[in-house]
Length: 543
Image (cartoon, rainbow, N blue to C red; front, side, top):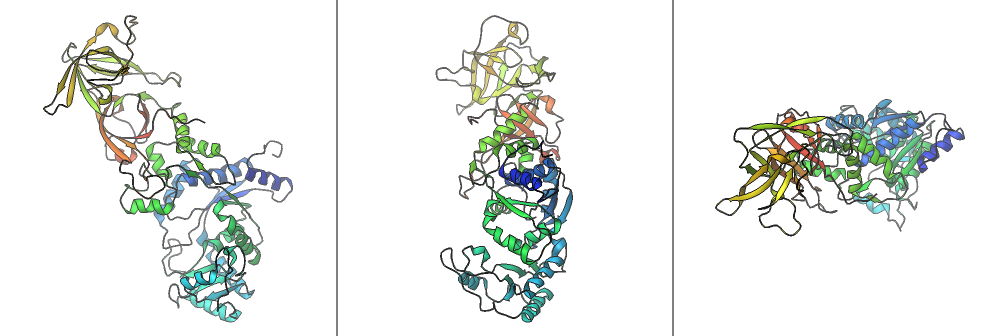
């Protein structure tokens, strides 16, 4: 393996060195989400890193739920997380819960008390903040810090047995209130919370804090490399303290990397939850959400997300990735896979006055785009009445406008040349339909070599096309503020080709000139044809 594995990012290089010098024989990583919300695109980076790193070295990866906070956790989130990890293409080797280890954590807390390394504190949260000090000033010891071992054991047992109210006391590590690292100033390791736990029921009314529980979980499982985001770098001394003072046999190594930040993308689980709770979106899987379930419903593929995560790389410096970079990879993935078809999002009726009434002919159209090999052909109906895009007609066009206007001739994709002869308006002066004539000699594929036209329009047959709801999106929040973007969702009533009638949920198409679209699975269950725009066809973004 040593000769086959090439150096890579700094985390991979650490693993290579650890295997080379015999520190570890096998690699074990873990993905440890808290089940208090749905996974988002930022989690995809951590998932991909942990699973692919272990896989490259023939190791294993555990999925572990850090369920130490019963007030915020829910079985719905557990199920969604497991589904998202699988959807991304990964299988965990073992499924664990932090709550599996509550008994061990409790006994280790008692060990710390017996060693004089932990004490029960009565300070209120406000008083504790006062005593903690600042980044430039040391903290001061709690007046309860010098309680004896027996008293601390007794009080801790009262906390466990439910004799004390929530918030009455906490168990704190006894380290150093003058330490420059605030995380080492006697942090809380247990709190009272009389809440029913989804896994352990009412067995416990005290719960360990994340910073105490996490290193113990890693050590119990034998995790070799505990990979987390950069904000935990200052927590690493306490991580190592817990492993050492709790006398754990396995000693995992915490390694931090920069978290994923994307422009115009909400990466705060708290803010995402508020959008759901306030009804701004229709759920965690709303296509405007950066959750994995939202991206899936919008039409993103697991392959595109994994490629994106690998291409942005792993570093120790925080930075922000342009959202167009993520769009680039879904575009690059879909362009190779999905069939091309036509859809009209904002319909304008065209009546071809010299086409035979009641007649419908079927024209041959390629399913593939220029980036694909032959995907076969489909037959599309054409008759006297069709729909084109409103934007493809102007009554008084500017110079170099090559689409349809009075007196101008354009090509209908896969069909004929048509020429605009008359504009029909309502009483308010709005264009309701246009009348055109077609040239039968210009049929697509006929070999016509006469006059040239500069504009090619997509269209659908008015009688045979299917009404469809088409949804386009913008960022849900404006810039970095919490202001909701009123234009984040636009719902259009358009038409698609009749061949899309039986499209299954999550079927993907390239709509000619419009972009890539996904059949919304939520509405497909109701028998309603709704297409979500995944991404536009082109971007100005340069790699």
